[in-house]
Length: 176
Image (cartoon, rainbow, N blue to C red):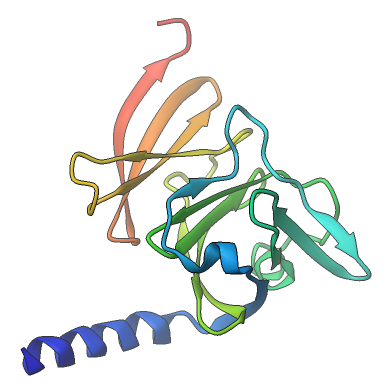
């Protein structure tokens, strides 16, 4: 049992050490639970707004504010209002991406008002996700799989495996 705990601790440390940046993340008591939630259903994604030089997105259902400047800097995008952001909370982690992002960002809440961030490249280099949508697939409620759907000239659905690999699970041509 002790060896298992030690191994889990080492693996967790390695995961967090691979993610070097943190960002400001104002959480509320509503978010203390490890619920599953999606803030981009039916194309109604939350959009960014500016407070001074800070670009934020608010999860309307809970009032959480995510300060996006560190992510926008890494995406080489300028902070601005009106960016549609798809956000999913799965087992205590937050996943987010937006129209012009090249990566999926994973937020690990650490202490009040801070989250460590990691990223994974989106499944295709030149993907244009006009309305990114996250869904869950699960036969076993303890083993959720995050799915990313992109509609462009064809609809593709990818499943995220172990937070580091995309698997294309469906590709349909428009009109089929």
